[in-house]
Length: 181
Image (cartoon, rainbow, N blue to C red; front, side, top):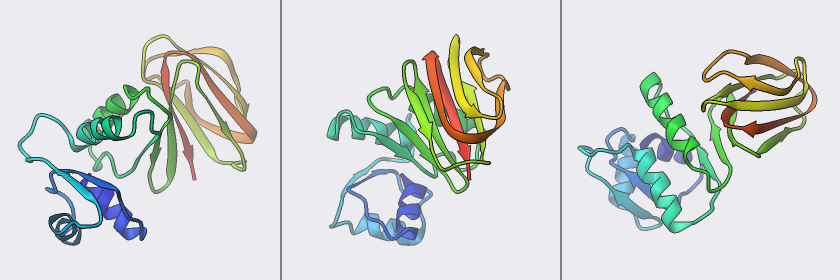
């Protein structure tokens, strides 16, 4: 993905496969994609029916079945893209899904999955149901919830605080949990 490649370059990392249309990548990133020799390129026409993320997730499924996914630079700062990204990533149930941004780490949790958070005392934590009939439990936070229903996109789990080793478990449904740095 375009900005994801720029983030990798900025962090001094390399990639195995570039998937995207190169319409919003930096000039340096585009030059790297155009002359790629150290990684594979799945280049797509910018006039397509799918986002670069959808194409990248499909590529991960084909190349590395069951691989954990970490998405970064995924929304482009657009609310419509943010919702689409959450939908795409929520439908990836093959393995854990993370979103890593500048000031936040997020984890999509499906039914039966949990996230244990250590060394984050005092950090802000939020959880939001992104599927109907989501029920969660959380321990080690300022306000703990035990088998609590979360309304779809409701604010029940917003702006909590980590007090100790925290454990978040999704009993039913799907939620996205955010830990702010």
